[in-house]
Image (cartoon, rainbow over all chains, first blue to last red; front, side, top):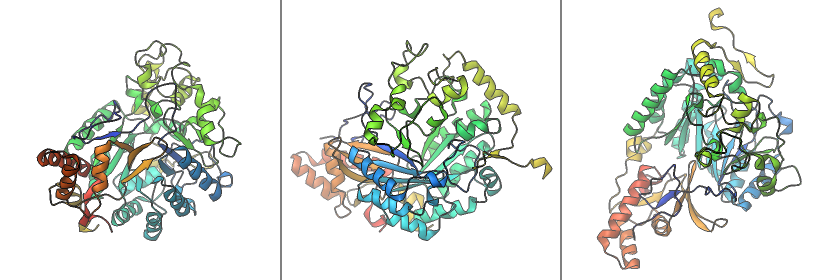
Length: 399
Length: 109
């Protein structure tokens, strides 16, 4: 009667316990409703991180879905088979109805996760979210010491984050530390891993910045050196081994220095979608950077299931039929699905091109050179994220 | 930070026959009508437990000991207790290592 596997994924196959990771199968013809959906409740946020994954053109508060509209979205998601929802932003806790939305999700049987900077939380507020049924919290950290962390965020919030992480543990909430890494904080990676252990976190996501939206605007200030990436990989490997059973470490590598492109979003329109503050349904949180695509909204006459299955934006880069060479005849085309469409658009001007992160792309050598050059000579000054289109950080030398 | 949730105490649960396992907060077992199967919802992942894993997880109710779970399954499957015991403990140990299963008396009220 040994427990056995039913549904293995080639990526996470570790089936000693009768539990496989459930993922949609790779059959390219059918696209089941994703297991998890990202809900960007708002673009408002007190932090101004230059690597923010939100679009540079942010949605104003007046365009955000109302409480009733978000509740309707949650109801519809539960009905069509979504199991987990990630409440994100912007900063989701600026929404006064967050506890109400979490409670609604809980009543529908949805598993709710909160992705937050934590700087607006109080112990009472967090307790109310926990009471509403919140299942997991992810708190972002910009570094492991206040001076640098606050400078990166453009906001003095580091000590509040530490406090909030403590409240999360007191309330029994599983805690993930989100560590977004780049040239100016990679030297703090060992310290950030130690900090996650000290905070009694369950997981840490060590995510090298991906260059879309604000991050693309700030690329010269963020791009790490190859030596930093090699160090980071070594540090993560060592820590993963040492902290087995104490801290799970997820690691996202930067693809400018990679040979193979990432399987972005698990493939376009295959296992993920997100909903923007104004209700647009996107195949990826950066998809609006692809200006040649139009996205349907939950405010349209279409159901979310229809948008997922039938809308042009989802079908445009689904599967492999759309691929040009060198992807079309590539042996890896069903493994990485041609990499990232947003990156292809940002760097080549067409989302249908091969992601330049792939060594088979004719543009690959260019982005490698760009990364090398910017990491060596790029400015350290950030363009802080805000609704005004960004503000250049004051020159440190002149302070 | 309270001592009850200190990392070593919380994480390194060694599953033994007298352990009383329960699902951790943030770990939910439910039936998924859409896909017609049981799923275990955990942070950032959806796990697909097989039939036997579901049975074990359902018995992790914070009341029964591991020994009682093994007895029950051995009787239900008319199988040797040692064999079943080894499987049950191995699976629970794995889940405990990931923080999905905790000792009931240490679980958050």
